[in-house]
Image 1 (cartoon, rainbow, N blue to C red):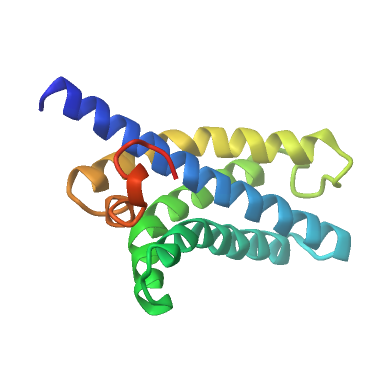
Image 2: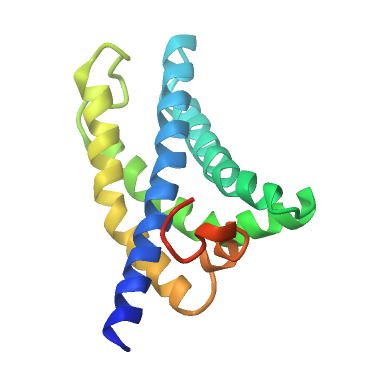
Amino acid sequence: MHALAEQDLNRAAFSATVHCLTGCAIGEVLGMAIATAAGWGNLASIVLAIVLAFLFGYLLTLWPVLRAGLSLRQATGVALAADTVSIAIMEAVDNAFVIVVPGALNAGLSDAKFWWSIAVGLAIAFGPAWAANRWLIARGKGHAVAHEYHGAHAGHGHH
């Protein structure tokens, strides 16, 4: 592969992974915060965090695709194709990390362990999610599907 093409592929994968990380972080923190504030147990907390991570991850792709003029049904298909693998990897790795950190699941919102365990889990998840995004984009799949709808910014790593 040409060096410039390789660099563009790496940049596109990085951009897609930052996008995924953003949606996952919003969903994770919001889900854990809601569940903690409501006094829910660990399983309910994890399930809500994962559901919201997928929701926010998809919404971050859905919005620019809808603005590009696709119907909600078409845009939903693009978001599902663009983000499902990346979000699934990000969530699996992040939640596995939070689960194995002693006391992280029971940490309250005012406990530093609550915040750093999610942050470190997402940071660890970035690598495998980036690798998956790069592999998918190189094959015209994953976030490559959404990039054609991102207007004048397509191919420049901006959303």
